[in-house]
Length: 197
Image (cartoon, rainbow, N blue to C red; front, side):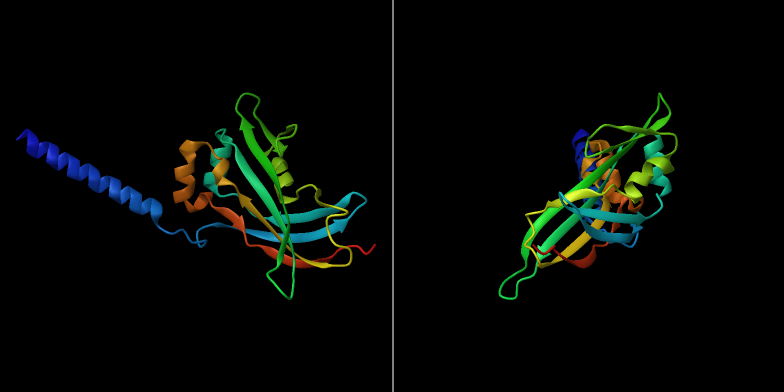
């Protein structure tokens, strides 16, 4: 009798684990993902080098907004890739750069905090004010002046995503299985000609 119960319990547990594994391994399309539009994307030349100018448009899902107000930090990463096309071989991978904005809510002070690439935090009264750093990231240096070949044309790609890999571990499974937690734009692509000497 005890052996039959153990056998039944073991089979039930195994079935539940296999069902959970199947749910976790199901492909996740972007149909349920929150849409992010890249409204501005360009490179600007400066004395130090080339700076990324970008702007995005999106609305946080109720699930993400609720998670932030409960004190779970969210990491929004803007990624930039520059490649130089070559007619005789694959494109040359030239530059990869990213800027991450961490947004969190402090339950004690009732303020939102935002930090860019782990730098000094800024406090904001509202989530909208803190999200302004994500929607319109500060211009940042993606390439020094001498890195790009003068006069060459480069393909530039820009995107914004919620970096779920930086979430606290208990929320990682939730993020992987919930479309409310998937926030990403498509790559916005354009060409840029480096300054002549």
